[in-house]
Length: 633
Image 1 (tube, rainbow, N blue to C red):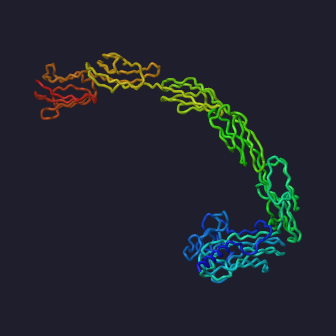
Image 2: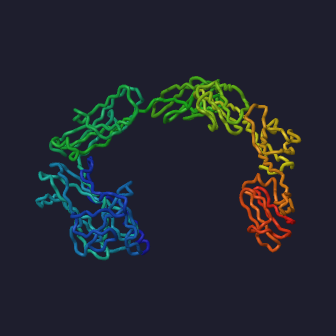
Image 3: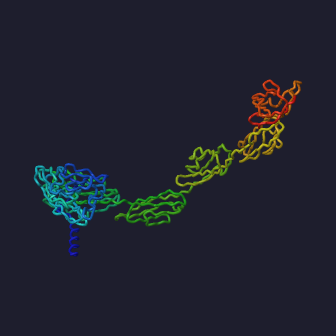
């Protein structure tokens, strides 16, 4: 039993690979009708509208439903379900097919009107069908009916039971028919089987093509329909078609040519023999074919058929080239168009490669290189000139220089046609041979000098002399007669420094001299370099207050001697603040603003002899002074 089952399975698979029905045995024309259910980006397409009585769903169809889809993925995908397939149209992953889950009762699946066909013309009808069942169930039996609009059946063709099984296979069903006087026809696709538990199919690529006679063709009296010719050569090619008789009542003919942009009629060439003439042939592929139809229909593409194509290929002659010119030391590549064989000859050089490379080029490699190629029996030669250039000799106006920060300097290079400086920071124009440079840091500029093919480089280094960084220290406060040390600091490039003015300094050549000014003074620390760059400068202000002496006793007894508490230097402090308290902490005297001597009274009454205490703020810069006063009577 197992052997019989395997035999039947092999037989079934072989049967599925067959084209079933009656095919055109002669020449075929281009499709007049091509129903492939369109294409799109989504999985499901649009319905066929009134072309069917089945109900459309954008998903898995049930009995009496159909869908337009790219594939059946996920539709009844179990062990006893449907094959998971894609549409039939070759090289069209976005194409759709019509997927039908048959109704319980037989009936029309699809019906459409055909464009007007040609009277007296035979057509081949074909359509691709696949049985979706992956198990043995009810088998589809499809009838194709081609009728006139008046109801006359021109052709009816039934597929018979379409086999199912574990291996999915699209089957092409076809038949031929002849159009009579009525040319507007209707195609009906009818389901002859019963639905339920099977009878599920997919349709795609339904086509109508004109069918014509058989022809025996010759090129220059030979059976081979292909020939080759060399570029610029002369050649005549006789195309002949011996067409079988009695297919058309009155046959007509038309030769066409295709040079890569589609088929075009050749004016006046309406016999079964045509001679193509080449004089100075240009490279390319030239195709010729003979169309035939009833003579009255020969000018209508939907009526005529085309016999197999004659092809004349004109091969290009040798085309030599190179990647130069290049510079000494670089590589240069020789180049050729596609051919069967290659042979290069040049100065001390030969090669059979298509695109050989000359490494580490030298001046001795310059010269003419000859390429000889053979392609489809054509042997031709061409030359190319290899040019090896010397690199430019770059000359700059200097290699190193020093400038003061903020100053500019002209860079200059010569020896080429174009120039490119980098970095571009601080340059007036990086593409000129003599840019102005104003760097703010030490910079090495590189210039790429080109003579059109070769590039050479040179460098110029600029040292930027920056101003010394000078710090004369914080401002200082002293009292008359006191001394202070200045805290000068210098960093960066400098050769000498000085304090200005130098008065009241113990050592003006020291960064930290001792200053004893009698009054306020501003000292500037100046650092200079021998390059003539701007000096660095900073200043410190020394504030000199008068010497403060505060008496600790006075005798307000009216004798005119030491009757008030007087502080001589206090009058120089306009915002002086004074508070005097007794030993109990009671405020007995207060003064803000210009100093007023104290007369030893409180509210106009004399205070008793005692020790009193004071706090004095001369200003915000001086410390608070405090002490005691002995009031004597």
